[in-house]
Length: 219
Image (tube, rainbow, N blue to C red; front, side, top):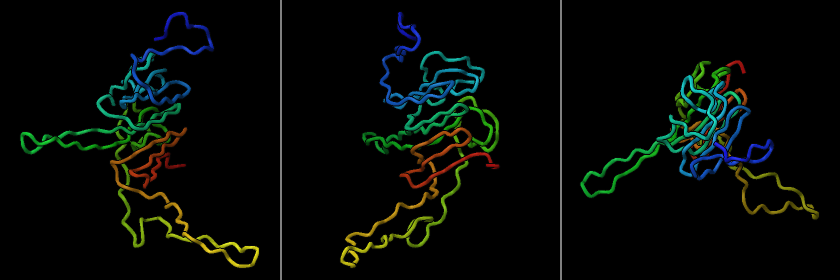
């Protein structure tokens, strides 16, 4: 997996990725995930905690290897820690046009996948079972109903209290300051970003409008 004559400890070594254009990498103490420009997610490392995304009973992986369960999807976000990994991957479905010469149409569905050690609710599958390959997280809550005056949980536009100038007059406020809305639940598919913590997981929903978390019920 490495070029010859580069075995000195502490020196950078070339990892053979078959000339794949890599754009992002994330490392845990036992494994590494790396994303290609085309959205293909690679994993390698120690199989003990199944962090590299290999199949059940898979041995340690010494070189960057595409994660088979996600190879037909385009991964747009991923994160990994010691005991689990997360990814947002997009499925593309192309439908032929109604007539022979019509352009086909494509639809895109983003889903969250998790794998690793299932303790403490970190995988989001409703139990503590380990998952050795990327598995879709399905149990997202439905969106709350819209409230009058904006999205549920959002604050109304407000203007900060004016400060008093040297002449004792309050300065004019040219534009109101609109605070950022609180995170609100939105329906998936449509996640855009994930983050893995030691015993919890986070996901941002479509357009940044939803923040989801899953963790042990006792936490």
